[in-house]
Amino acid sequence: MRRLFCLVTALVAAAGLTTGVAEGAAKTPKVLVIGLDGTRFDKLLAADTPNVHALVQRGYSSRSSLYGSGMAPTLSGPGWSSILTGVWPDKHLVKDNAFTGNNLAAYPSWLARAETANPALDTYAAVDWKPIGDRILRTGQDRKYVLDGDSAGYENTDPQLAADAEKHLKQDKADASFVYFGETDEAGHAHGADSPEYAATLRSDDAYIGRLLTAISARPTYASEDWLIMLTTDHGHTGPGGHGGDSPEERMTFVVAAGGAVPAGTPAVAPKIVDIAPTALRHLGIALSLDGYALGAVPVDPFDSAVLKSRVDETGVPASVPGWTHDAPSGWTVRNASAMPAGVTEWQGWAFTNDDFWTRTAPGQEREANVRSRGVFAVADPDEWDDKGSPSSKGTFDSSLVSPALTVSDKSTVDIGFVSHYRQDGTQRGALTVSFDGGAEKPILAYGPESSSANRGGDVLSQPTTASVAVPAGARSARFTWRLYAAGNNWYWAVDAPHLAAR
Image 1: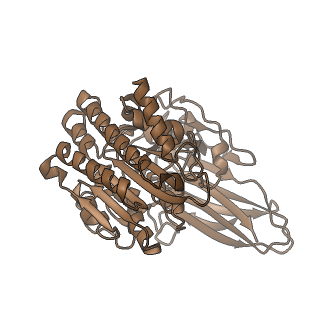
Image 2: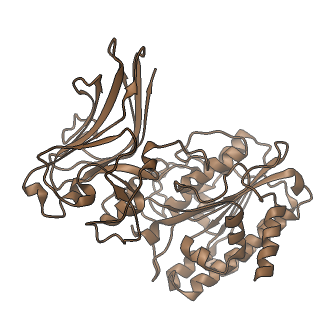
Image 3: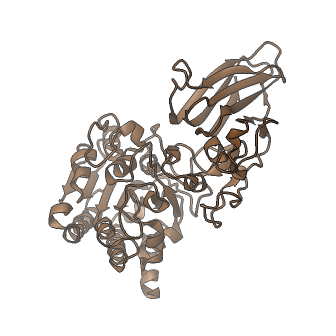
């Protein structure tokens, strides 16, 4: 095993992947994305997978999480569409494996975008789940090798894909390539993710990856090439087998990357599967605005500095999962109304939390759809607050999140942007206001049950939200407040990535 691991490490190094940064600007960029359907990241790392471990050791790796209720089920159609297009299901509109009503024409794959931006690129795809080839990659590749694993058996078609991709990577120009393997998902369905059969398919996938890396290292031009290799999956599996639901195991995805401008190590803020496409395109010199960000280029978020701790009242969350605090990041303030009754400790007013913790508190209530939030975000959750002592029978939830002061002297306008994930119920209201120099609160945005409100009386699921506010003459500073109030056992408001700028 040790000898094999050393050999694989040498091959990774030979492919130009020894660091997370390209070694020379003159090198020709090449991209290979490998998709492993239905692969649990924890199982992949626990298995005898030396090629995967070599890429992890030399590059970037992180577990990630999918959407769930309210966005799309954890199925292959939405998953691979998100990976290949770089946008979420509310844009590409693939909500199942039938692809009914999809919007993929407006959001083509990263291979198609690369081909359009630079027709001289050699683009290639090899897949054996036919809907990927027929639907997502319907156009935009110079060569597409599509087999039908559902009919022929993935244990038969995966080796054929590996052989074709191996030949392509060794002999062709191979600027931008996507290779998919499907047998692991079939093993998950038939035997479960905890089974020896599932582990065996992971070993097979790892062997295929080794063959592809060896083909790259054997290229006569590899010394003058800068290879970016990425591995990912569309969803996870339960231990007994199956996916489509909202459990952490079904939502489990991952990103492994080595080469190019990708930083090495485990990132502090987990990536998303929509980051694969913009990372590949950046490496090829193509800049596009998508839902994802190129790895290492996610904007700085002030909430990510919050130090999270373990559960208190949320005993359904494992004690090993830290994920909440009321201690606001520097400059930020949480202010609860004095008459607000006490409820669940974690949600006694605005809290700072993360996806893994928050979605475990009450799965299947569209918390999983908060896909555009990353790392730590702020949440006001009266639904969970009311689960201890029924505080809504004694009063209402009323809490405000207040920003640091922004200097606005000699400025005419303040721009504000954030991700808003809001569910409306009953009398609950949300408001964004601004105060100049400590004066009266001026309304910017109002959520409520009325159709005339900013949310039109309904939900706003993970939407980038922006506004501009005129600065009064002579004003020196501005503070913004997000308030959730008039709420009982209703829903919630999550806010992330706040950005304030005066101009």
